[in-house]
Image (spheres, rainbow, N blue to C red):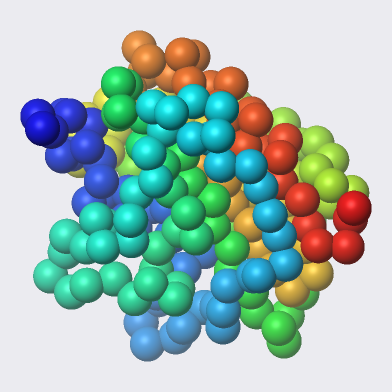
Length: 190
C-alpha cells in the first residue's frame, strides 16, 4: 500500500505532539497514569475510512515511546486524506488541574509545531467542565498543517483531543473531530 505523505511525515512527529500532557521534562514524570473514567464514540463507527492507529506505529525516534504515558490513548488516521484524530488523558492524583491552566496545557500540545499562525480560541462547556478549543495553522517537520485541539479537565485528570490535517483537507474531516468531542462522556455523567 502506498504510504500517504501525511503519514510518513506526520506520524513520527505526532508521537510527541499527541502525547500532549505526557511530555517529559528532564527526569520528572509529569503524569502518574491514564484515565479509565471516560468513553467516546470512535470515528470509525460513522466512517470506515478512519482506521485506528496502533501504538507501535508511533515508535520512530531513537527510543521507543512508553505507551503508559507517551502516546495517545487512542488515535485514528483517515485513509483518504491522511488526517489524524486522537484522544489522550493524563492524571496526576496529587494535583487537580484547574480551568485556568487549560491554555498552558494546550501550549504543550504545540511544542512539535513551528511557525504557529492564525490561532483562534474559544472556551465552552464540555460535560459540565470548562474546555478550551484552539485552531491554528503551523508547520510540522516543515510540512504545513492545520490543527484543532480541545483540552478539558475532570478532577485529577486532563483530557486532550486533537485533529491534524493538511490545510486544504482540514474542513473535509472537521466534522469527525466535532463528533468525537461531542461524544466524550465522563463516567458518572449518564
